[in-house]
Amino acid sequence: MTLVERYRAFVRGLSVNPVGRAGVVLTTSSFLTFLFMELLRLLGVLTNAYIGLITYLLLPALFVVGLALIPLGWWLYRKARARADRELLAERFSPDAVAPRPGGSRLFVTVAVFTLVNLLFLSVASMRMLTFMDTPVFCGTACHKVMHPEWATYQVSPHARVRCVDCHVGEGAGALVSSKLNGARQMFLAMFNAYERPVPTPVRQLRPARETCEKCHWPDKFYGYRQQVRVHYGMDRDSTPRYTTLNLKIDTGEAAGHAGIHWHVAEANAVRYASAEDEREEMLWVEVRQKDGTWRRFTRRGRPVTVAPEEWQRTLDCVDCHNRATHIYEEPDAAVDERLRRGLMDRSLPFVRREVLGALLPDYPDRDAAMAGIAARLEGAYSRLLPEMTATQRQALEKTITATQAVYNRNIHPLMAVRWGTYPSHLDHRRDGGCFRCHNQELVDATGAAVPHDCTLCHSFLAYDSARPYQFLDAPADDDPEAAMHRYLREEFIRQGE
Image (cartoon, rainbow, N blue to C red; front, side, top):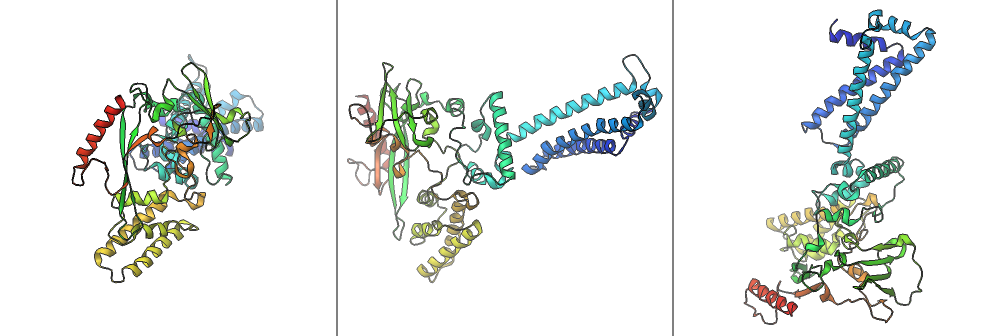
C-alpha cells in the first residue's frame, strides 16, 4: 500500500459519521488553504490586513475546531455501536493496522506522526500570527475605521519606519501578554461599536520612555545648539513670509556647564509633578531634585494644597513634552504655512493663505462634504479675485485645492470626532500649553519664587517675525546671511563660555 493509499484509508477511518467527516474536511481544507495563502503572502501577492486576519486567525481556529470534531465524532460512533475500541478500530482501519508490532501498531505510528505535524503547524501559525500582529499595517488597517486617524499621521511621521509595537508594547513577555489582552478588549469594543470617539491618548498605558524612546535617543548625548527656522505667511495679497529663527539649546547641561532643553530628562536630574485628573495639562505642583538630594516644590498660587492621588503623580520623561512624537496633528495655520513653504500651495494666487484657511476651518459633516466644500470655496473665491484666470493660474489653483484637501485628510477625521485641536502638542506653548504648563508665574516655591520662564532658557533668537531668516544688529542689509549666522554663533559660544 502506497503512502497516498494509506492516508486515504486513514481519513476514511476517521470519517465515522457526519461529525467526524466535518472534522476531517475542516482540518484538511484549513491546512491546505493556510499553506496556499502563506505562499502568496511570502511572494508579496497578498498584503491586505484583512487577508492576514483570515490567514493567521481564522484558518488556525478552523483547524483546531476540526481537530476537536474528529475525537467527538469517534466518541459518538463508539457510543452508538456499544463495542470495544479495538474491535471498532479493526473494523474501520483493518485488523492489520491495529495489530501489535515493535514500536507500536501502524495506526499508532500514523496518529503520532499526524500529531507532530499538527503541533508543528499550530506552532508555526502562532508564530506567524504574532509576527503579523506586530506589523504597522495590521495596527493601522485591521480596524480601519477606528485607527484611520493614527494610521494617516503615522505614515508621514518622523517614526514611520518604527513599528507601532516598539513604543506601544515594549519588551518582555509581560508586556506582550498585556498588549494582547488589551488588543482583545479593543477588538470586542470595535465589534460592538462601543469604543470612544475620539480615541483617548494612551497617556497612562505607554511604556516608560527609558524603555522605548531612549532605545534610539540618548538625551545625555545631546550637545550644543540646533537651529530652527520657522516661516509664517501673512494674510495680505502676497502672503508675505516672516521669519523666526531659533537657536534651540538642546544640552542636558552636564557637559556644557549650562542647562538646555534636555536638562529635564538628564540621568543626573529628576523632575516630578502632579497634574489634575492625570491630563498632564494643568499642573498642581512641580518639584525638582536639588544637588543635596532634597526636593524643591513649586505649587500653584492660590490653590489649596491637597494630596494628589498617586496615579496623578509622575516623573517627567520624554513623552511629557514629545506627546505627539508620531501621531502629529497639525494646527491649521501651521499646516498651511508648511505647504506654502514647500511650494505645494501657490503663493502667486492672491490672498492664498487667507482663502485656504477659510476653506479649511468650517466644520464639515463628513469627508465627502469637506472635499466638495473646499473645492467649491476656493473655486468661488478665485472666480471673484481672478475673473479672467489664465491657464497658469488655473493650474496653480488646482494644485492648491489638492494640497488643501490633503491637509484636511491628514488632520481631520469626522467619523472619529477628530477635528482641529483635538490632540494638542506639548512641544510649543500655544494657548498656554507645552512649556508654559510648568514655566509660568503661577507655580511658586515656599519663598514665592516662580519657576523660571524666560524665553532664553530654551532658545535664543536669531530673528523674530523678520523679513529675513537672520536678523542681526550688526549685519548690513547686503551681508551674507550664512556669514552673519556663523559670526553670531561664534560670539554666542564665547559668551556662554564666560
